[in-house]
Image 1: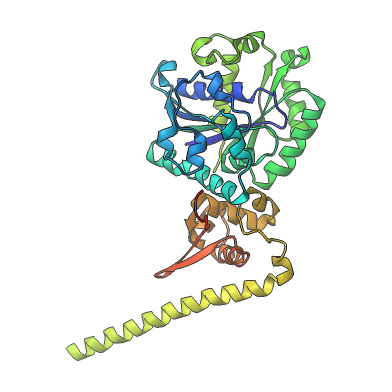
Image 2: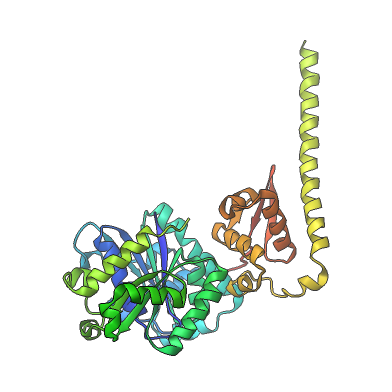
Length: 259
Length: 124
């Protein structure tokens, strides 16, 4: 069944973008047709990470109703071997575009929500996509809230930072609950040896803290930091432990019942 | 024989017309009931008629569920919304009419069906 997955966090720097890109690549590597969108309009990063060039039309243009969704999708399927398809829709990184987004009013945001919701019909029903992945901005800004309302499943990335833990707990129990969102949590950049060695006990602790299922615990791998987004792990580092974790997470998302 | 058939058809058409008018009347009664439930003071809590995510957050739980469903569909009947929310059609009809009264939705009658939709205005 097709799903929209929003990758979100309370604070910045929790690894949302790396997680979004590599989850999208994992689904594509499994033979699925995937569209990845950069919804972080105030700090776009997919443009740089995926090293896309000569882009004429952006996700901003689709939300401004200046073009259809087909025009903004960039085909990156050649970067993944196999039958899967990977497309990306990028946020415009120019200062003008970021300034433009910050001046939008509530009616524009309402229409933007409508445009995001209509992706289900346009990409799932008409173009037979299997997954849409939203890389969102941290916290509760308009673009990330629109993404969460639209999503079928929310992946929350968090670190061990105490302010992040506290904010993430409140975000899940208050905001996500209001919209009855299926949620899974990824604990990222973990340094604690206990977390690495005693998975069952750690998972129980996480479940008690956040009251949502644990999708995965990602240790602080130097290779991920060094890669700077250069690699699509499922394609370029197929035997890396992070790749195994990605497949486990993708499996849990795939099996989640979204009704 | 032909005359009797003609009279039968005429009676059927009249009954159809009566049924249609009763349905229209029913819709109007629904709205009046909701108007009684939601007094002016309540309506003042929702001064902006944009059905954006902030509005969705401010709505009471029962209305939010209906509003999110109509946002997903763009345009739908009470029956279609009830299919999504797993609640009774009559209940959804009542909530949808409440959202119409609050100014977040518009309704349009097409034949025997009443469709509810989000008025998104001109794009800019």
